Image (cartoon, rainbow, N blue to C red; front, top):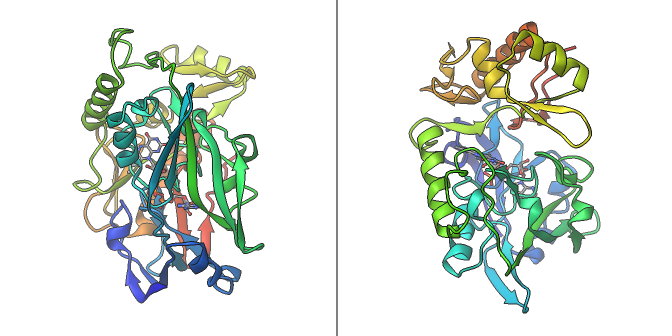
Length: 341
Ligand SMILES: Cc1cc2nc3c(=O)[nH]c(=O)nc-3n(C[C@H](O)[C@H](O)[C@H](O)COP(=O)(O)OP(=O)(O)OC[C@H]3O[C@@H](n4cnc5c(N)ncnc54)[C@H](O)[C@@H]3O)c2cc1C
């Protein structure tokens, strides 16, 4: 199996943080994964394209970066099924499907990263989540040293969450993802920005609109290193929401099925007057407050310190403890920001 010692990860994370791993392994199939049993008993991190990862120390754990490639398509009278290997690029998969007339992923165009990471936080955008299409996930279990199929229900998908971030964290690797698309496709246009398109528009129209909107709103990590939304949108109970709405009538909100209410983390950060705020080479983006950026020579812990400052300032104003969406990785494993309460 391909591997390297003392490997620089600067080009493998969208924050462009300078960090080195003692060793990186590039398994390309199940046979090579089986050789990693001893590695997976210690501290390690699975890396896709690093667009949801912040290395907070100069040294990282051992890295496993799979190099599984390939896409296959099958169909019945009612649906298409597309199976993609984990190291395929997500946006390339979206384009592959749309070019073949397989519609469904258009709202999820241009999300950075790999196919294998997409189910981990149940990627979503413009009113759609990958969970809407997942038929099954092929999971290589490090304990059993073999693969198994997990159904959609077994993946326990929620908003930016799944079993892969919880019970199965660090217990295996997603090697393939199988998606199912009905041939009876309907455009999903209820999200702000897409509702100006007509019901008869094509998936290509939607994809192009999503690409245009994303390019106009989000900083390109190749120019301004970042990892997209740094924090998850918080969900609060109805009582807390009512109190906030009294104080801030303009507060944007999204009622949830269980009576709780989702709020926009970006709005809270902006209201706390943190847009454009800078600290030691790290910054809150001046157009999109939910995005933290490396504006030059920030180290990973400078970005983490800024995140803690944002979390504290937002809490002081709203009594809401923001939680990171980005995974923060130190030498000995993941760092979890404490909830403030
Ligand atoms: C500019 C920008 C915009 C973004 N917009 C969105 C958006 O609209 N919606 C959204 O949901 N996200 C968004 N993100 C976040 C990011 O694109 C997603 O989280 C993406 O899925 C990360 O993919 P990756 O391969 O880079 O993951 P990485 O950062 O490499 O890894 C992320 C997590 O997945 C795990 N992982 C990676 N591969 C595997 C595997 N094969 N098996 C098991 N675990 C694995 C890692 O261990 C880690 O915990 C954005 C990021 C950026 C930089």
